[in-house]
Structure formats: C-alpha cells, structure tokens
Image (cartoon, rainbow, N blue to C red):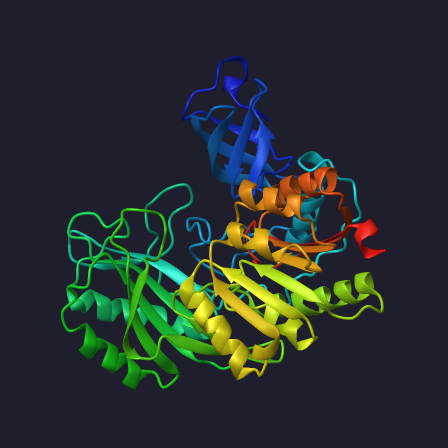
Length: 467
C-alpha cells in the first residue's frame, strides 16, 4: 500500500498511498506516514485509501496534496460546484449531507470531552434542510490582473490566491445571479483592485446581502479609497437593472488588515439596509452589521431559547435578560416579545441604531434597551440582579475579561450560542468548574453546510440561584 519511501525519511514530492482515519477541525483527512508522522490531506475522507504527494512538514505533522482516491468512501459524492476541489470557500461538498451532520455532531462531543473535560449528553444535530443555496451574504475578494482582467472569488485552500468564479451554489440564487454581471461591470470600470490594498489599492471585496424572506438585495463595495470614478452612475444603473436591489453602498477599509470592513460606510444610491423576515419579526440589517448567514437555521434557535427559559424558570415568568454582543437584536427581540426585559450591549454603534429601530418597528421598545458600550464594562453593571445572560460571541469565544465579569456576578441562567466548538468547550469548562454552573443542554445546529463549521447552543444554570 505504501511506496518505497517507507524505509526512508519523508521528503517533499514523495508520493505514497495512505489510509485516512478521520478528519481534523479543518475537515482535512488525517492519516499517518509509514514512519509514524501524522499527515493531513485536504479533500480526503475517513475510510478512504488515497494516493498523495507530500507538500511540506509543519511543526508536528506533514501536509500532502491529494493525487487520487484509490478506494473511495461510500459517502463520497459529486460536488455541486466545479471549483470545489480548489476553492477554499467550502471544504466538504464531496461528502454526503448525512455524513457531514454525523461528523459535526461528533466534533462537538469530542471538543466538550477533550477541551472542556465535560461528559454530557449532546442532542442530535439539527441538520440543514437546504445544504445548498442557503447563504444570505457573501464577501468576495477581488483583484485586477496585470492584463487588466478582474478576478473575483474565494481564496484557494491554504493560500491567498483567488480562485476566479462566476457562480457559487451555496449562495442564495438571487445573490448567485449577481456575480457574473457585477464582475463584468467592475472590470469595465477600470478601477484598481487588490484584496490586500497593495499597490494603488482600490476595490478589495464585493459584499452581497439578501433578505431571504423579502427578496431585497444590497450591494456593498469595500475599497481602500473612494477614488472610484463614475461610481454614482454605475450604482444608478444597477438600481435600474435589478428591481429587487434596494441600495448600493461603499465601505472604506484603508488599513492592510484581515478585518474585512472599515468603520465608514456611505450609501451611494438607495438605502443602506435590507429588510428581513425573521421569527415573525421584520428586521432591518445594515451593510456592515452582523447577521447569521443561514436565516432558516438561525430561526430554529429562537424556540430553543424560549423553551429552555420556560423550563428553567418554571412558573416565575419572564424577568431581566442581558444580551451581550446583541448586534441588531436578532435573538433578544424575539425574547422581548415573550415578555423579557432586554438589556442589549454592543460595541458597534450602527448595529445598536438598527437594534433600536427594529425594537420600535416591532413595537417592542418598552421592553428593550440597547446601548453602544464596552461590553465588559457594561456587563459588570448589568449582571447584578439580572435573571439571564445570553452571549453569541465571535469565533474566539468569550474574552478572558468577559469571563471574569460573569464569574464575579453569575446570573442564574446562561445561554451560550457558539460558532466554534473548541472555544465553546474551553469556556464551558471554566463556567462549570469556577462559576457553579450545571450544563443542562447542548444542541448542535448546522448553520454552515459544505463547510467544517457548526453552531452550538449551550444552556447552563445555577441550581441554588433558581431555587
């Protein structure tokens, strides 16, 4: 099964056959070289025998390129996208939806046990009914070649090289239909383009957003500067061309950073937000504000939150709920509708403005207060006397300062929505060990089909505080 390199030290360029035993957290196939070193193979699936070409050694493992699948998995399938093997936007299109769900379930279980030292029942994952055409937002890097052509697409896996694309099957079809004509117009514009703001700078990313329930479209150009001749005229033509397009925006991000959007956004034509129907509410979502990319799966979280609170609160009814990282009020507004008094905390002033607007439009202002503040400082004031804390932090999880504030004034109930099982497990381990919390429920939800990512809702409570 292995080549002649088995008796020698592995070298870049060596080819050999390997048995894939599992996947790592990036959904790369895991195997071992004949000499015993771990080897990661993008595109390989558990149980397969694959021929690989060794690329280079990392600190504790080798990386390899998949050359051929000698014995395929029964769960291997044909990707919906012709670029799937090269594009880094998706990593699992070649695996069946059922196998993806089972693996993500186990990822959550393993993270809780290995990182959080928590052995607990994990509910069966809520699989996505739409494994394709589900994303309501895309942020696509763009660049201009030396020949003047405009390339747009996601980065090749493990690199900063753009894989040029004209369509993306995981996007909502209404966004997918915009890519090719927008590329043509941007190419003819003559504007410089570089995702890293190198050289002349100029365009960096093309951001697209759709209200899944309303069909409203929003185009945002992310640029390192605003020297884009005839932008107003081009935006006007786009507004005339697509009746569902409600606005064209320009976001300025001059800094050479991986942060996609800068602090300043102006509306070039139309308006700078779309309307979305979410959990029975009408929400306004801005060009530069966060909203979950999978609307239908995000909606499934709402009844989970309501049911958990009803179960833990018994007959006590609604009380005070603090929503850290509240954004535009995605989850706290439905809970306010249930009767909760919401205190929303958020750093982004534009998100807070929209949260207040959303509360007003849905006649929930009397039960909500949203503040643009330093979350950690505000939590220290808001947690004493509160009944519930809801957190939906970024991928890095809770900041150590945030954890310290929570542990100093732990509310009776803590609801934690996470997009990273590893940081979730780390935080849950600390909250149960040092905060007196019991982990009552863990519910994985697949927000991101075709990728290695999984969302998880954890419900914690302090028994003495609920007595």
